[in-house]
Length: 202
Image 1 (spheres, rainbow, N blue to C red):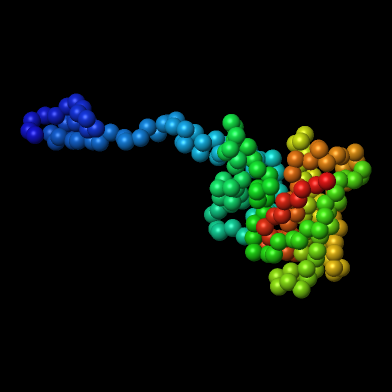
Image 2 (tube, rainbow, N blue to C red):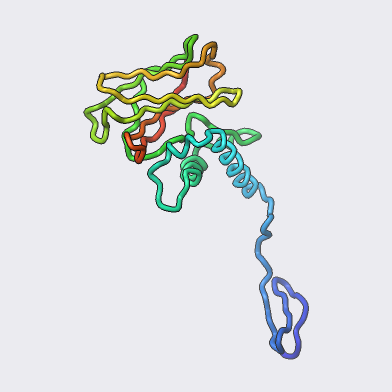
């Protein structure tokens, strides 16, 4: 190939610059391609990001054990995009039974029961003080969301009794009003957390 080059052929574009012929390859994939798998990924990210926003700053407390430079948002998305996005229906949806709202090295809380009373939500749990890394000064955190979009939070110290009870005051609430409910623990200084436990309420 000699002389000045200009134009395109197959997957190549030819130009002349500074007396030199330049051959460039066209992009193999459009940046804004909208194939079904690509749209599924984009919509999953969008749904995950919207869900993250509904927890306010609570998820910063649920993901304290993160590498330098990584945000709670990054960890939340990494923990939930693989399994908590239900792709089985006509539209994507959050599978709240698989959603992770806290993650860390502390042992998970063992939930005994959860009920919705006239005064609010009540959850009983085992303190499991004989398990390594479990401390009576740990903070137990109960989070619930209602169908109206309310974020309900309660905290208390794990304590020394064999069982503990934590509740969220919300007079008049019904089990049907509760979209999701989770329990996790943090150590006293907030530097470590457990993986959250999803709690079906009755």
